Image (cartoon, rainbow, N blue to C red; front, side):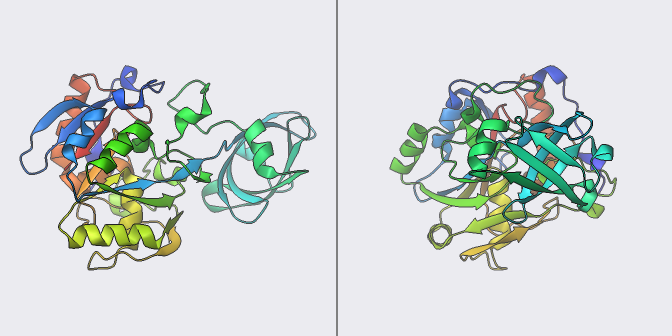
Length: 341
């Protein structure tokens, strides 16, 4: 299976640059896997495709303002550090620019010295282990100095940081938003609950590995980065009870999907669990738990397109994407959504 098998043509002007003020006003492409039928709806209509007894799985991770702009000590050169994963209290695995000038021992200052950093060592794939020095509370300093780590295809800063958070974001730790969840409001979630749909909250701290381009032509040779997750007993019980009673488990986003598919045993049973996952889902994978998926439109040749193709079939998914392009849907993080059932 080749990476190029998952390519599709996307005009650049269809890449959404801004979130909609009304989260539920995005368009929704409905794909019925059994009939191949496509419907064009508004996201608030998603409730019509959820049944009493179903379970909606949401990822309650919260994006941290992980992008720091500073100066290299000694030269004053501009430096960017993107926090990826906390290794210890003040040591983070980070992506740095310019990498060639930030070797072990280099020091960087941010915010007129309120925050300082030292490059400790080079980690996997050129990332750096960075130690931070400061007085006070790190999270408060990061909140005042850091920027939201928007994807590179979004070309300007976000005025309201909360627009890159889901309304149910709770636990800090992500370097990117679980963007399928950006379409929900508290009001829509309450209507969904009132309909008899249960909601299971899991946590997966999204790393950039999910969004890195696949650099190998043979899909089997691609390696995913690990991401930390937690599924508590309440969420596991809700999912298990839903399956036992004949309901469907519908994931909001690929991160929710990857988490429950990582935790479930070979019989599809969930248990409370915390750990790290590098699960890579592509065509040929047999889903153990997920029965439906709400997701955004993903980059060509990405692992996310491969995951969606594993669930609904590559030809069917790429045909739906072709339709979305013709119908001028908005793509990627701030774009429109799909539900695959």
